[in-house]
Length: 334
Figure (cartoon, rainbow, N blue to C red):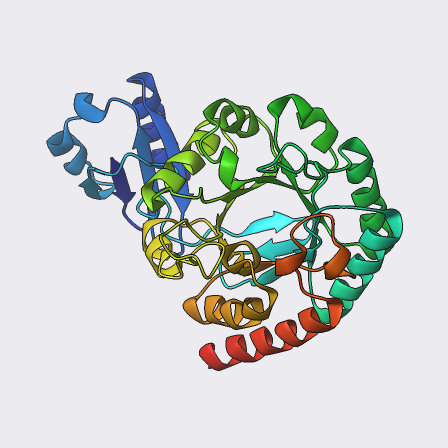
């Protein structure tokens, strides 16, 4: 349920009403907009007398919310959320590019790539230290050593870092990581999501291989219900019957999610297509669709990459992509 307060409602009146809601066992989510304040009520709202509530002088309207996701719902939070990642803002018109290798392989590799992508306009550095792989024989990442190399690259470039967690038991290793990525395979690892909800870390939540947008939003709700509202959604392609590409990039997810939620939305065309020559085109398309950012895999030597070389761009290719994306954004913002 949401209750919209009239303009002119004083903080004291608002706080008094919120206290009443809490006394009857409801959680209250307060969203301060330019023109209205929205109170999102979470819990057993059947005990609320809508008629009585609507009769209050400070209430403009009351509405029940049918969707099971509440905190992530745009009806609870009409304006876009803007998330601050060490001074880098994403959401609400702030567009960012996350770039870097699929996996951290060496000091020279990660620092070299970090410097190049920053020169081209990337504002966050991605790199996998823990790699969930389909085959147990594939490279699984450098683990704690990989995170240390990412932190060294951050020190060299100033770029905030993004890295994937695969096991909640490793959470302590991510204490200095700016953005914790939850990969597609862990989107419905609810125990992990609950633990991440108790942190104050920015969480980049990827859509699962065969999950609906509603399921993605419910996974975000697990994190937000724990008190952590710093969530970024990522569309990374879904599995369909098509075999020419690794996955199928669902760009319709961007405008649909925009209607449903206030959370920032980024697109990962690298995992979606699995083919490096398609990444630039789909990145431009994602920008045109209204995404708040992109996640692009960049490697200094894709042919010899230990992970996902086929979908990784060279630094020069990434530079061309960044130029094209900037032009697309300039065109759609005119």
